[in-house]
Amino acid sequence: MSSREGLSRPDVQIHAVLAIMQDHGKVKATEDGFTLHLCQLRPESRGRIGLRSADPFADPVIAANYLATAEDRRVMRACVGIGRDVARQAALDPYRAGELSPGEDVRTDDEIDAWVRRTAETIYHPVGTCKMGAADDTMAVVDATLAVRGLQGLRVVDASVMPTLIGSNTNAPTIMIAEKAADMIKGRQLARAA
Image (cartoon, rainbow, N blue to C red; front, side, top):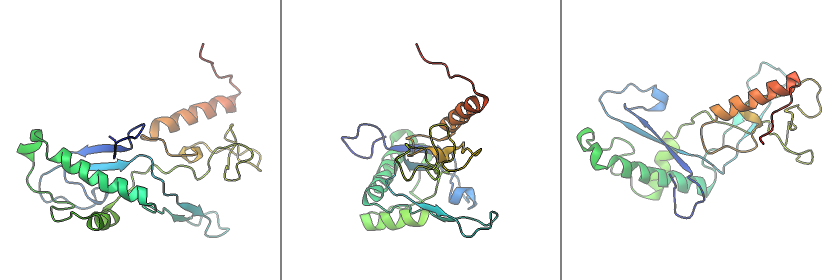
């Protein structure tokens, strides 16, 4: 769906869960219900990842930087409205009681922003930490063959090579990246469309 008029493509995805699900399912549901997870497909906020030390087994330092831009916060407020509109549809009347979260009393932009900051979750689609790019792109870690610049014999073959987040789930494109990498490593010529 689109969070506002005038967008050239949808920027919100809805995941409907036939259960009350909070904190990735870690919070045990005490009643029946449904959950709508609304995802921003193209966030503007950018995080950082770095090394904690020279120890290759040390966890990295990750600063996700979610909701850093005004546009990301606007989209998430729109998501709350979209979710409420979907939940109020007549087809769901037999299955809906009151709104558990964020709750009917959460109405203002500040209240919605606070609720989003408290409860927003990742859907595990980080990309771009080893982005692919042109030789003159100082932020590009890998080239068009997925080879790490400045090192020999090392490629990165996962979603981290995507320069930007795609507007959908990352599983299928990551499989495509892996298939193409396998062909390049084996030296296979890629078929061209006629």
